[in-house]
Length: 254
Image (cartoon, rainbow, N blue to C red; front, side, top):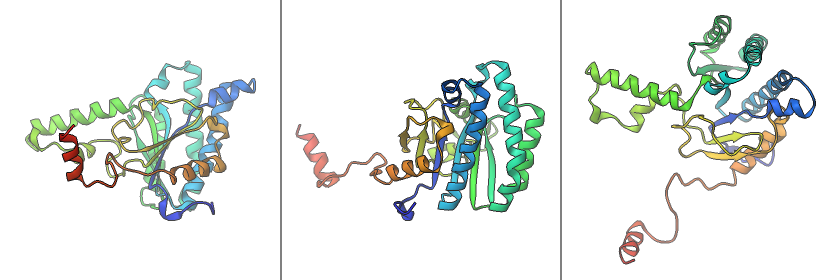
């Protein structure tokens, strides 16, 4: 941690936690064992964020596409999530960690929903770290939902279509009130975003690692943060020695 500049840490880190199944397969274990070991990586990253003072962490825990997995694996994932929520609640309360949910509750087993809502309610007043659990989540579906909600408000007369802005549209997303991610980490070496935070990742820095999620612990997380601090974030702008007027003039002469 001493190699990090505490003044240049991301405010919001989002993680695509990939590779649990491959981790288990390499060890000739059931895929569920990989998911169980992945839960330990969740604990490690959450604790690191709190220790470093990173205020927002979003974890891609269950995507819309995950429903296509074998029913036995899906059931096991829900059981693991419920078990995780129950076991972690005391530490969440002790460490000041708030849990939020992004995604659709519809379709999630009732007993899991009850436990999730219980944790959300009991931690809603905490502010040391906000952990967004993306469960039954899809980026395209989130945007579609936001568009429908805005259309309903237009139809009711609350807004006119001309009032739509990026800021207003963001208020209809699951992540409303949360800053866009500064850093998105994907484990297991896959170079895709997999329908994750499609609106919010516009200017996020991407960090891809070959490390499988069950092996991603504090050391790997700190490596991602060190890499992030080497980046020059431009947010779509272009920096050189010319002024904007000089660049426009140069472009018009070509």
